[in-house]
Image (cartoon, rainbow, N blue to C red; front, side):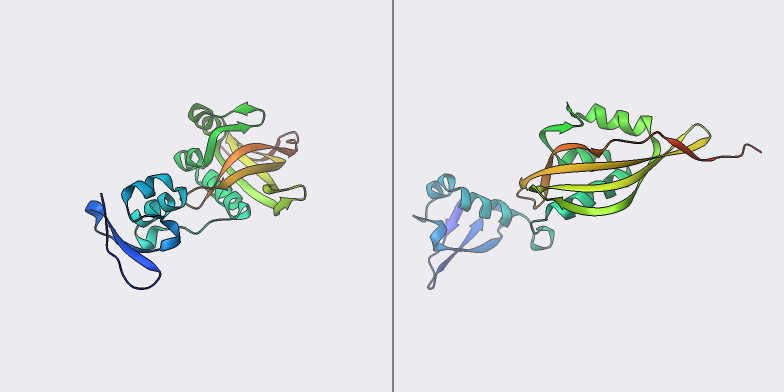
Length: 188
């Protein structure tokens, strides 16, 4: 339920129901000051949804480069839920649709995995929504620490209302090399 008050100038303040938060919206977003015009205007609905978030929690739109850095940070933290929330539906990961079970299985297979960036994030020349980067992936396998060098690309969608683009596709720019042993832990 929205309540409107007319005010001089080019804006109309409104309250958002129980939340009792108000926000200034330019009159160009509304043809009529009625709830019906809100439901028919995508722009107005975006403003209403954004107004529900406290100012401190609103995010600015992030670039694909920033989103790729966030993707690697979440992977290094092994934040499964955070990674899952970054995926568009559907998301193509190395030629297969990815599910929560795939993410869980990945972190079970690669115990204590870590990604060290060796070539900075760069936009692909042919696609401004695709980010390319290279890294060394290391993980624990028994009493050994293994590593492999990899080149990867991540293609993002447009930014969501939360401000982050979603991952639509992940693939290799350079397939993984043969894994090598970094070091073997002593049992003594």
